[in-house]
Image (cartoon, rainbow, N blue to C red; front, top):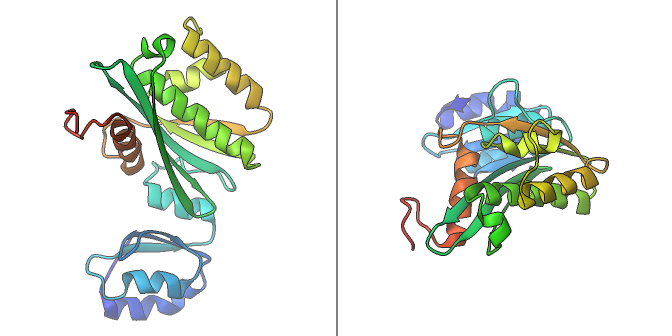
Amino acid sequence: MTRCGSRELRLLQFRYMAKKFYAVKNGRETGIFNTWPECQRQVTGFGGAEFKGFETLAEAEAYLSGAPRGTAPRAGAATAYVDGSYDAGTGRFSYGMVLFYNGEEITRNEAFCDAAMAVMRNVAGEIRGAAEAMRCCVENGIEKLDIYYDYAGIEKWCTGEWKTNKEGTTRYKEYYDFVKNKVDVRFVKVKGHSGDKYNDMADRLAKEALGIDKDGGVS
């Protein structure tokens, strides 16, 4: 991670120009940039700028997402963070999803009213988020997908380690089986509510879909 002021940025300019991807964690705009001048505009003169140059997009995405060592996204893969939420007052559930591909960040969320799924509460939403990430990849011809999740069933129902004994889990497994030959899905477990930036963002998006604020109240 690079933290520096304008003088140090000038000294590092030559070193960074050789890189292909530039990930800005803290700057005027954050994200992944394809040229050093684009990156430089975001960080020069910006107090507390955090950025780094990489030779591959996967490395840049891993740095930006804060993925733990050994769980970095694969080269050429889309990366999705998913989470779910549930409103006991209405019986509705929702998902939040943050997806990265080719340097773009896509966020989606949606709420549902489905009695058969709602018995699983927030897990129902996380299932829908994982399925949505798979659907996005299939529809856009993306052949590899790394899904970062915090509930073990998101992976274990797909792999057959857990039995699908509810309608919602059965449908989820059936969809995974339908698409698994079209998109190579790798599952990566993260600890929920542990400060992982994009897992927390997915959680917040799921709550927003239900009109729930971060403290659990209805907004």
